[in-house]
Amino acid sequence: MEQKRRRDLTISGIMGGQGGTYHSVNLNGVGKVNGHLDCIHFHCHGRVKIQGDVKVEQMAEIHGDARIAGNLESGKLKVHGKTNVGGYVSGEEIEIHGFLKVNSHCEAESFCARGGFRINGLLNAGTIDIQLYAPCEAKEIGGETIRIQKPGAVSPFSKFIRSILPRIDVLTVETIEGDDIHLEYTRAKVVRGTNVTIGPGCIIDMVEYRQHFDQDKNAKVLESKRV
Figure 1: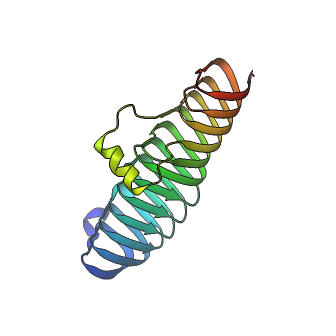
Figure 2: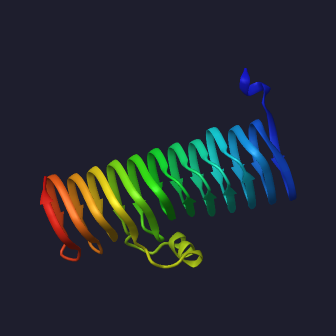
């Protein structure tokens, strides 16, 4: 019944709107929203600034250039283009096909990146799958299954990403901690896990593992120990 009482918010062209509680929010063109948004569905195209938090019950899909001053919470989040979040990001599923910048932490059940990101706090998810089409950075990463890989073939998508972002396709992080960890082209101070595989292109200061550790000949690990 609550969803039926909610109205829609649509912004097209160059105009602004007010925050509030809505069913569907559709932002197109160049716009600005003053205040917090609480909605069921959220679609953003073009260039949009939101002066508050965004809370989405089901799906949030962002294209173009979106700047959110506060926090972003969504059941499922898909990022295309560039998105800048001033607070934290949380959701059940997060997919990145462009670039995501988060000033605080990012938390999800599953985190899948086919673009780039910069997270100034902790990236925490049950499953983390990152394909290094673009530079990626986080202060810390934690999860159960963590897989960081560089794609083999150069696809049209990767060419597009590299045309809008600097071409340094590595993950930079201070600490990675998880159960099953597979890393490629990663620069980290400390990696802790049950089963740890350090693949090509990695530069790691310290690896701490509980059961299994494997290192590629083209990886550099300064120190490793079983704990």
